[in-house]
Each structure stands twice: as C-alpha cells, then as structure tokens.
Image (cartoon, rainbow, N blue to C red):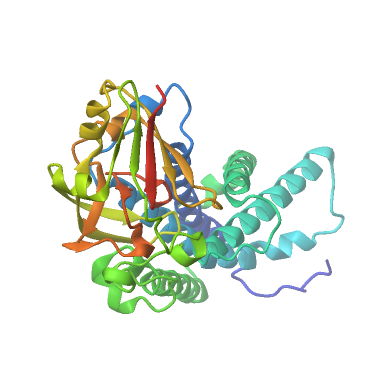
Length: 365
C-alpha cells in the first residue's frame, strides 16, 4: 500500500473500536438467541425433557430479537469493514508468523460473518439459492464466527483497551460518521422489526411478512397446496397410538372437552402473530391412550413431502395445559393453509414444529 492512499481520518482505531462494540454486542445477542432456537429444534438428549414452555411468548421474543439483531448487524459490519479496510491492503501481507496467523484469523472471521448474515437474510425471505442445508450450515458458521471473534478480541485486546474510552477530543467527522451509522441501523431495524413487534407494524416496509395478512388474519409459510394437503381424505381419522390405541373422527374430536389457548405462532424467519386457538389438550389425548405424563410424542402430518412432516414433541410440551390439538382459530374452523383438519399449537415452541394437517399422534417414550 502506498503512503497516503487512504486519507480519511476515520480509518483510525478509535472509530473501529466504537463500531466494533456495537457490532460485537449485536453478534453476541444474535448468537445466543440463535443457539436457543437450534436447541429447541434439535435438543440434546440430556436437555430435551427440560425445555421451557413458559412464558408462552418466550420464543416469539428470542427469535424476533435474533432476526432483528442479525439485520442490524449488516450495516454495522459494513461500517466496520469500511473503517478498517486500509489494513487489508498492508504490504507486505505478512511480516511474521504471528502477523500471518492474525490476518488469516481476520479472513476467517470476515468470511464467516458475511456468509452467516447473507444466508440468514435470505432465510427470512425463504429464498434458498445454495445446495447445502441452511439450518446446519447456519449453526456451524455461527460457531466459526464466534471463535474468530474471540480470537480477534484476544489479539487486539491491548489496542482495544487503549481506545475504549475517549482519550482526546473527538473528530467532527467521526461524530457525523457514527451518527450516520446509528441512524442507518435504527432505520433498517424499524422497517423490518414490525413482523414481530406489533407497535412497529405500520413501519413494516422491508420485512418479508406482515403478521396480520393471510388466511384468517395469520400469515403462512407453507400452504396446503404446496404441501399437497388441500383436500382432506374423506375417511380422515386422528390416530392416537399408545398402550391403549384408538381413533377419533372429527365429530368425536369436537365432542370432547374443548379448551382455548392464546398463543403466538413464532416462525424461525422472525415473524410472529398471536391468536386464540381452540381444541383438545394433548395431555388429555395422551392420557386416554394410557400413556404417562412424561411421554414423548411423534406427530405425523398428512404432508408427505416436507422437512417437518414428522416431528417429535418433548414431554414438557405434551403435558403443558396450553398445548392443544387445535381445531379452530379465532372462533373459526381452521383454514386448510393453517392445518385443517387439526394442528399442533404449543407455548414457547418454534413455528416449524407446530405441525399442521395432523393425522397421527404416537407415544414413543
């Protein structure tokens, strides 16, 4: 790099540290909430019987925060890279073994963060233009990015400490730049967070979902037509498999004691919407089959071609009184897109696991 190539005084350690603090905070929150979502979808054996079901809107909050901080991190990462990019053109590229390892670590950190945020953003649009599985790749990229971040912080700790507090009067240019970055982050967040924050809904300009638009006032990710379940078999029965297996017709289901649950559908893409669901408690159906309250369940959908056609329900959800085999929503019979003839609704659970078009509940443990 020739002397004087980058003349802006904003390419300095103080500006990088200030933006780095904001970016680091966003990435840590995004990582923790994303890890929580992954654990709910694929819990380790030692934890699966202890998953929290209350508060009922916990996943609605954490996943909204996950997507919100992930989107906020995009302009922050852009601002951070602009501030430090002259260092990427240093010559020679490696002055020592330590310097070479430091630069390789930065390359790994930047590459993993860019790919993580890019794929995460496209996931909110349900636009998968890559051949690899999103969820598993997103999970491992997050660990790589976190490791790279921690390594970078360790290497740069002395420089970060030296510029953590203002040591001299701030530049006017820096104040203007940081103000612009702050306003950009706030603007991007405000026009996307309405998909999970009701009081920001009128500003929901760029988010892929409006939570109040869709059949029966609720959005859907996968329609009945896409799932091949638009026509319910005339001989549909709910099969409950346990020590005392049985079947129920729709008339028999509706004749059972009905309960209401006010619960949100909270999607991994970040949108959420609350509704009043009416149906039969899962724990009552399980008890009728002679299974204990500690039972884990396998839920099977009429959908035959989908990643979540068969899901497992941990015992904490199965025994919660708010968990229903829902037959109605907001007083109306379920629309086909919302899972007619019956669907699962449980508190604190990702929307992808709220199985629609249910026809079989099986006790597996």
